[in-house]
Image (cartoon, rainbow, N blue to C red; front, side):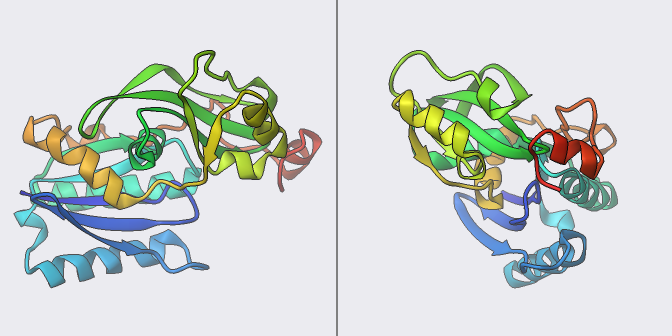
Length: 229
């Protein structure tokens, strides 16, 4: 079984090809829009494997949350490829991807949401490449991110480095921090068992997970709230 995966929810975009447990990954070149670089890398991966899009069992993509433009790139590319070949799509959240790549059993996934906020979700490992979300994925100010009350949690993602106040809170709570970004290879590993169970969705139903109600703020609003322009 072959699974193609796309992940562009952050500045570090990637794509990967999974085949019976083996994964080959490509990283989008820095400094260029994912919209320009993602599909050429996909074509390279497929050509090197000697298969076409029609030979895939499904296409996985990072559904979010994350950078709004990036989420649209991965979702749109996945939809276009899937519709043409009549394939199911397998959406995987960026926070679950962080948790799965961490190697820990209980993970507080924290992704920089910009605008002075953080995307946060708590995940527990329930099996090999199987995770359960505790509660909901939320977006909050660094001071308002809800931390686990029990021990044994790992904080994973890029938000602690972006927000020193959050890093200080994590340290005070005794949580170790693992810097990371969501990658397509992990998306593929999470998606493969779901594809085998027939859990893919119709491409027409795919949509980015934004979490925020307001998806854009002016530069003045961001700066007034302590965010980045």
